[in-house]
Length: 253
Image: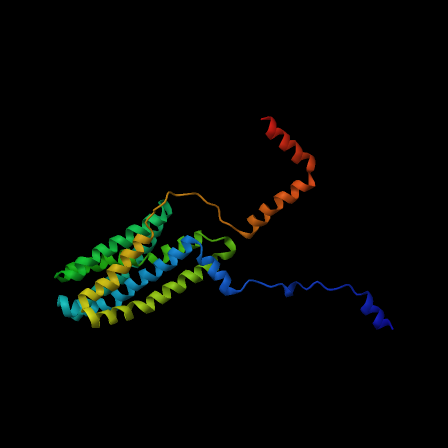
């Protein structure tokens, strides 16, 4: 009897764990609808296609077309990668002082312009070293720069998810770049194929960040902001006299 009585008087339990949380797929899709997150994700895909196509196929190009020896090719490619030690903090500091989209736009378009004479003309070892330095200086900071742009467009509770989305696109671009370049070489030859797989993606990445519209200061939309905004009408219902006085004041003035 005591057990039956206990079952009767026990209040219904509130099970918070039964609330339906949004799925990972829906939250990621919602984040990609944010303009800067989507543009940054596509841009990091394109930038990594360009960078990894260069890293994979420039040695073959310098050996077979330019006629450099293996040692010179290794030095040129090494310098291309080493420039990231200087360019990543330098471009990061620059983007902290001016608009990040301008930095992304200029670096993408300039790297595409530099790659054209690198892939379409004959030159010496020292010229190849200069081209490699400039190309690496402009392309290597793209990962950090574009991830930062995506993070600034997300609320504090979504920064990790947005970072994961942008970096996933970057990893896909890294895997696709050498494959795309190799497939195009079989069709067009190495010169034209590298222009399509290095120059064109870098140029597109820069154009995507062209500041087409004027800069508008916007606050991050967070769950806390939405909650506070929704509390406004409810608070006014608790103070009807204040609401009526405000309406009267607006009619008089």
